Image (cartoon, rainbow, N blue to C red):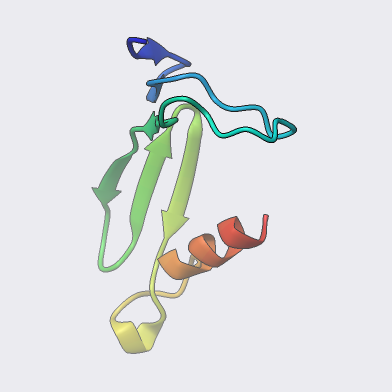
Length: 81
């Protein structure tokens, strides 16, 4: 199967297996997301994906302004979601 666009910045390279299906997929499922990241000032960065913006920063002791969550906070939140 060839890659198909699933929206801006998202490609699905094969069919997604059903969550309720006991058998494994015949071929690997691959989902590609593209995100742009821009450095603003000090440690403040903004990531953009589709219509969403995610701002990250670092605390003052890591030379940031502590105005946004640290990047690893988003990773932890994603794992818990």
